[in-house]
Image (cartoon, rainbow, N blue to C red; front, side, top):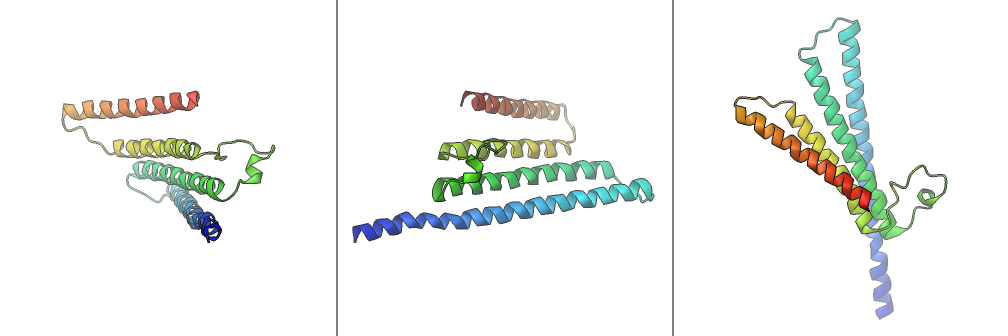
Length: 170
């Protein structure tokens, strides 16, 4: 009875496949949606440049769309790293990723700390991009707003610096 229970308990790890498949589906959707958004933006640019179609505030809209696409691509990357990490930690090693023909070990996850470290760095990048996106629409109504903006940029810079330093030590 004990052996049967332990075998059932051990095999319950395969439920993680649902998270892996869901993450891969979400990643593909985000990549496709962001790429389609960039294609639409490029089409609007061509219409504006060569066909004389007028788009008010096109530059602001273009920068906003591009930053949103970068944000979505980073989130899709989080989903990819998460899916690969869960698979490697709970199901099996991905032999192709451990082969000598791989270009990088960035997607090889050996421990939960590896997964946490890689996800943390990408999530930090998402937060930096989100901050940058918000900064584009800031208006300086009072002098204190400029000080707040500077403090925010300093904090983002420090987060990037410490993240880089932590990556070098490990």
